[in-house]
Length: 260
Image 1 (cartoon, rainbow, N blue to C red):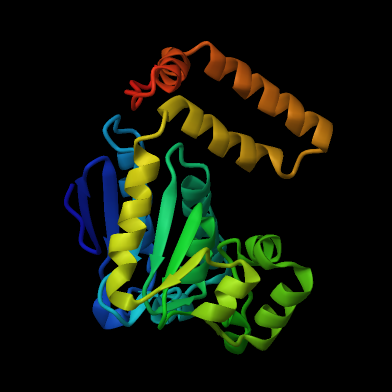
Image 2: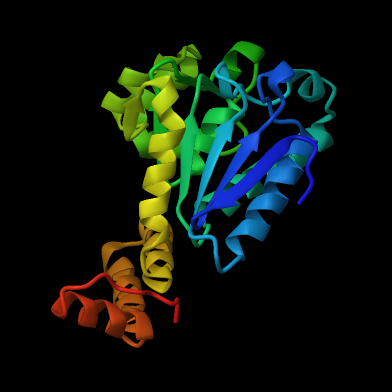
């Protein structure tokens, strides 16, 4: 795959996507959003890919928001379409059938934080700064930030962050539950990749059913979400992977999952 604004590589079942617009602090323009959407759709569909890592080029920024120069020229209709494309990308990440790990190096602001929040797991470097500063531009988050941030850190804390527009440091983000780990900058990609590699070798069908149970079930009433879980549990019990996993456990050996 050839891209103008992404670098994509994969090894040992893990694909790494690096957003590469270093002169713009990896800001998301329409072309980058389209490339990310296409790359993720393609990678998730490959049987040899069991996890994704998303990061940004350089050590200054993960993704420093949307491209303000492009955004400033949008008409109202163009803005609605731009937000719809951004939201669709975030849902593609959020509903991916393989785990997606964000490796947040430096600034994750606006659309960058919105993309990170769509990922299943977030690791941050010690120099990371995370925020939704759209209010300072006379805007609101448009790629899902008003919905995902309260779900991640609670309503009052999310309101404070969005109405002030002030970013938080990595340790504060970890305390609030916005990121799961904070590591030294030179350890970020190795640790995020090591996590992705551990997740990539798990039973593919069970992994997908866990992700879909969480994504679809969290906003359902408890009884309906339990029905969803029960249905997915039943599906897993009918797989060859379940037989392999239970046999490997009883035989005290490592399982060899085939995704069937």
